[in-house]
Length: 128
Image (cartoon, rainbow, N blue to C red; front, side, top):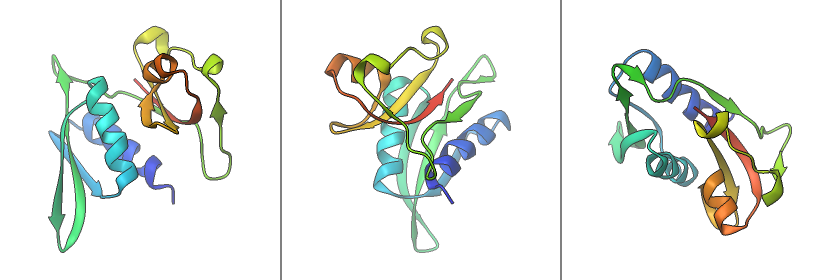
């Protein structure tokens, strides 16, 4: 199974169900993605906790006027097909209302930051 897909789908489903927070197994990659989403304003906070002796990442979700901030996600690069984007290929998502998350040599960053830093990389997913 694809752990990044599971993570973003769990966040989407929890926000659509009206949950205050959600948790999933911890990894450095998931932590970096959550940090990027926090910086972009899609999640309120994150913390690493231990449940049943295993580390988990707990994410606090954001709601605006009772509507979830995360309404849809679209996984781009999958295990079966990797998608890479150069700087010129990075476009705004939903006319600037969404975020493209990339894995670059400078770490996990959003599409806006990647254009600013002039780096390309593997397109992980879009979120809006």
